[in-house]
Every structure is written in C-alpha cells, then in structure tokens.
Length: 300
Image (tube, rainbow, N blue to C red):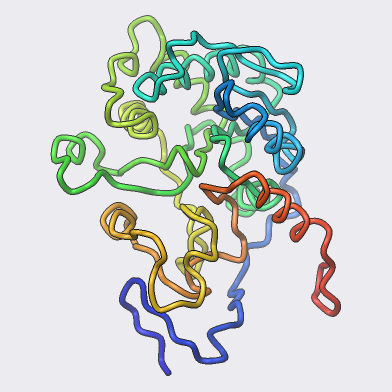
C-alpha cells in the first residue's frame, strides 16, 4: 500500500514499520558542544509528583537546572521563588518572565542556550545539542527562538494578526539562545518594555511568541529534513501505527503548520521534546534511551 499524504493517515505495510532515518545532519567538526541551562516550571503540589522525577531523569543532562516555584524544597537542587499568586494559570506569563530575569542574572554567561520547560515535559538533551551544532547556531549574535511551532486557533483573529509567524509551545518547552534571552530581559522586560503588557489569558507561550515577534527574534524551524517533528505534543505511541488518533487531534490540524502524520512519519528519529509525560514514563524513557543496548544497531 502507498502511504497517503493527507494528515492522520498511515499504511500498515511492513516497510512502514521501519524508521526511515533519512539524512541526519552531522555537526561540523569545529563546533563545540553548547551548554544548556534548563528552567522547569512547577508548583509546590507537583514537587514530589513531577519535579523530583524531572531532576532524576532528563534534568540530569542539562548543564544547569533550576525549578521555578513559589516554595523552597530541599528535594529540589535549586529554585527560583516567585510570588504565590503567580501559581494561578492566568499569571503564568508573570511567573515565567520573572524566572527569565533571574536566569539572566545568574546564568547568562554560563550557558549558550536556555530551555523553558514544564514539569511534564521530557527533553532528549543530547539531541537538542546535536540540533544546535548541526544547524551551526552556536555563538550567533542574532536572537534565536525555537520549539514546537504552533499558530493561534482560527477563531482568534486578533492573535493571528499579532503573531504572523506563530509561536512555540510552552508545554513542549521552547529554547532561547543567549542573544534572545539578553534581548528579552533588557528590552522586552525592561522598564519601558512592551512585553510587560501582554494579555495573559491567551497563554504564556502565546505571550512569549508575541514578545519574540515584537523583538525581531528569528524563529528556527525544528523539523527534520524529511518534515518530521523533533518536538511532539504527546508521547509518540499516540501517533504510531493506528488508523486513528486516541486523542482529539483537531487542535493539531489547525495549529500546527504541517499537521501531524500517523505512523513512524509522525516523529523524527532525532526527537528532542515530548509533552504530557507522566513521571513513571520519564524513567522508562530514560532506561530505553540510555541503558538499553540493541545488538547489531550502530552506535548503541
């Protein structure tokens, strides 16, 4: 059977069950590995349920990790404390912008790229660093902004005008380079910055997209050369061989520029980020990625 090109379609031919690795990008030999600082947004009620498990799994692969919350906790290595009223979802932009100010003051000269993630995000840090090196993004003075590319829902016409290039999902985690973080804090969030006035009810990630657009940041395409997503909004099993999505996929069809395919074409072998990952699955991913050796498979 020939695979159709429409969204949400697959074939069950045997060859479709093999990952077509395509042409993976190879970083230039002269490019040094980037240092990445991770800021994970959490709340006190999720310290034990989520945050400690982030720290025990993918967070170990960050060069630095800090948790953005309203209470100190000896279980979390380092925290940025925000006002308790900022724990409400409609105050999330204020919480995140405060966190970026603190990260800027402490880590700007220690890291090259800065990740904002949620406590149910899973990031394959080695693949993020490989992507940065392969795209030769190190040391650029141009502000860079990247992640899972989304556009506002069709019924938000005013947002579509303000976000002609869309925005990057907050749940999947978005990444700023040093130039973008510096510009965000000094200009966007400075005393006369426009980013203070953004309407929070549209979401923190929409607010960041609006801010990055107004500051002239470059939106970096993170899909692989074959158009497969390196950032996926659910665990991959949602998209893998099946004739239908087990979740409501209508928002993805309207918000993701290229939609999402079913089957192994859904997701890049160079996967970087997954959203909505339960804590127990973080350990499973950690085990499969870093401890399982597949006999006869190159590089494992």
